[in-house]
Image (cartoon, rainbow, N blue to C red; front, side, top):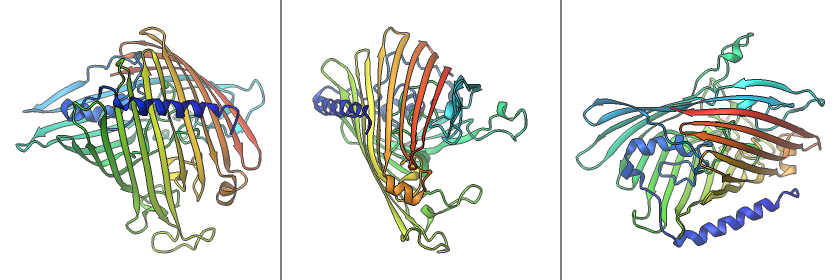
Length: 454
């Protein structure tokens, strides 16, 4: 661990404070009381940099007071009490980098770690609008016995570029992110479709890194969206001082081979009736001064068959199967104008959730991140971020090789100005990557970003 490791001690102390705060008055509003559309739209409002929230249908985000006022969504009445709500945001970033991040997902809005050191004074610049997002939520009728139904579709523009010619980078391709149906009654919601695994929890605030948040797959943040069946169950009444919710998910298996791409569902994670299983227990409320807090504990299990679909492959590294496991603790506390939030985790063989610096194999790793924010005024706020992941060196060497990623550290800072639905931010990101062979790669990004909520 680096000299910056004491930040994790600070986070652990914050988690203890949150636990103590469990006896304080509750602030969480039941998602079922808000209506299905309100619950469906929460992934936009609370996840992926939308104010430092936790993903889920009833997430109680300790979001910044400087977060933008929600835009009035476009609501189309379809007849009776049925409606279609259109929502989203426009995102634009102009950035400069002194290293290529293309192996760490890409440059610009999806930069996570550097893949090449450039000589000094070799900066390059560009623009990126791929975070731009469009959401459609269908609010269906309520049945006579109290069931409420809904559906949700979400997309952005990280589907690659149109071709490879001189003009391709100005023509980003849309991609499907989320698509699911909901059935809700009382404190129970059954969700079927593609949604975030419960392991996708707390999200750092950023205007540049939204679809690929700070630290995602690189410095302490993990989780991915999969097709599956999700159950969200309220465990406490609205009047409880501490709100509790249980999230359960059974999702399709996934891995990085042997067959990926156009030939779907042929990975080692798809063999037989194997799948992925996540569980998360959420706590939320307010302290005696009315400050909001939330805390969660999540676990993960899956199994991969290395013999593959059709039993066509031999054992790898003496193994015919891999058991993926993980545990995560995260949360946030909004104390007046001050925000502290983050998570810590440990996993084994969980590359499909972006663990081990997004590497696949029987690799153990530990990581976490912490972000501090402060609202100077209703319009001005600032954030600092630090995240770190340490993958087991011997595991990476065996399964990836000497060029595998052993350790990554990421720091970021942002000054943000907000005016209603409009946000403007100046952000700096620095990343230090250490490979198994001892090579050290460093990179910086400076970005000016804007976001406008529709």
